[in-house]
Image 1: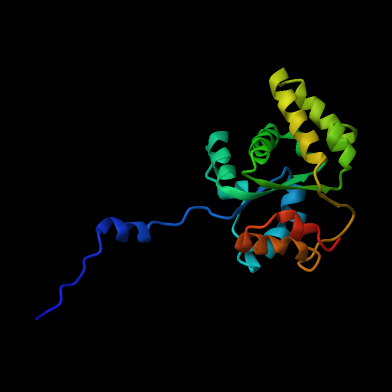
Image 2: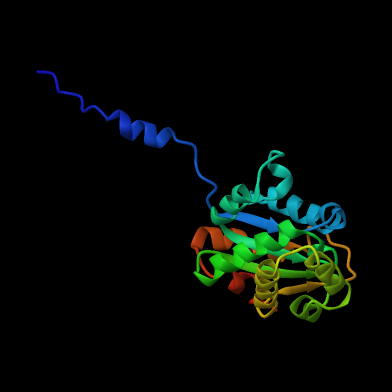
Length: 198
């Protein structure tokens, strides 16, 4: 007597064969070539070395609109907002930041603000060179846009963040970022891993 072989439904098989979503992704929000080829290049190298899944805008195809970037932000669990003097020159960066704030308020996104060669108060109050760039962009923007940008900048400036000024960055200097990997595996608050030793 032969035993019958239980057939696995094709629906179950196809489910296992589906490509994974962008789970545990780190979305990096920044502006400027001076960030991309200095601080960010070290950060990306460190993430790749430790197998951390991340996203920056150069990974996107040209011609995509903000809705597509908003989708990538929603797919992420962590976002790094890297503020610099030129950050406020970018309407896209500020719109991304407003979206990040909306998700953070709902508890759907952990955002770590990083102040790269810029004062926290300048970002919070739109002052100094950061403020000059912000208000220059504001001249060609609507009142609604300005309001949501200011709210997002103030919201994240009041959060626990990291200030990086006048320093050359190496993989060793960026070791604290790799605690993101622990967050991904244990789903604990990212701030505990970023700042518990400070």
